[in-house]
Length: 397
Image 1: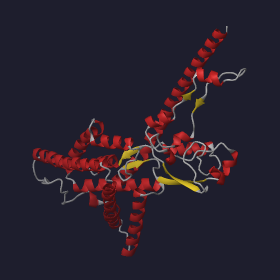
Image 2: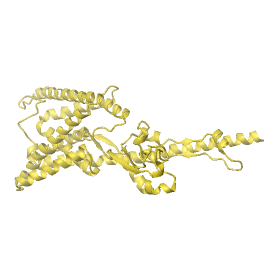
Image 3: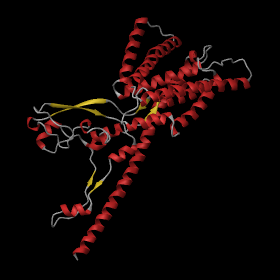
Image 4: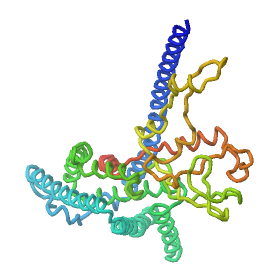
């Protein structure tokens, strides 16, 4: 009878475990659908804003609708030839421009592979400086001229200085997420307007088609440069440079500080996330809030189930058996397991006397909002430029 009772308990354990796993999978599927739709909506708004800026500019400012000066990457610019020659010239211009893009992308991947971060940062900062100061000044001057708005040079200089400096800080260092997103949308629109103005008419359409094919190859091919960049960043648990990526969540390096009591010198906190010093002074750790992909999030939110054998050893006589499911809330907000323990967030000590040291517990609403914010979606700025060039060029006709 005892053996039959134990077998019956084991069957109940197995059924309960299977039921909980099934519920967990259903919850994950519902969450994937919920946040997948939310992420798509988060992309609709910025991409639509970027295209709206370009279309509005093309229909109100004549400066961007015609030109006699073209890019150096498109040497074939004669527009007074027959259609067959125009098509051939357009393909030649498109492949020359594509070759330049392939070379520069390869250089960027090699610099990232060999951890030449300072060179990459300098490269991106120079590009941002040009777009935030030179391109923005040109755009502002044409807008003022189109609407016949008089303004003095000192006001323009003051505006450009504040606009450019704040943009550099938000893009390359840190700042409000909404402000950073606005700057990325603006520089994408400016870049799209530059392409529309300085590319020959027929070449623009061929370039869009060629870039579409190149984008598929670069992302989906096993040795595609953009795929290598993303995989390398995931292996190193690093976020891709914000000057290249539009993100709907914060990815900043911040500093968290906790104070150890005098009695905790030389010992770690409740989960061993670091150790206090001998005099019990404050402890600082760099916390990397990064946006992880859904696969890593599922791994961090995995269910830990106690086996029936272990539970029988720990179960006291007369107590009902149950399956313990461990799904910590804090684990969803931490970095992946490759990050050293001292870089993780300080965990909440179960000791009630440590409440003042660790701070009050976060409410469920606050935790859910932070988790929603960190489930960010990322899109390359090249896609913003691509869609804006496509719609803006079409609107010019």
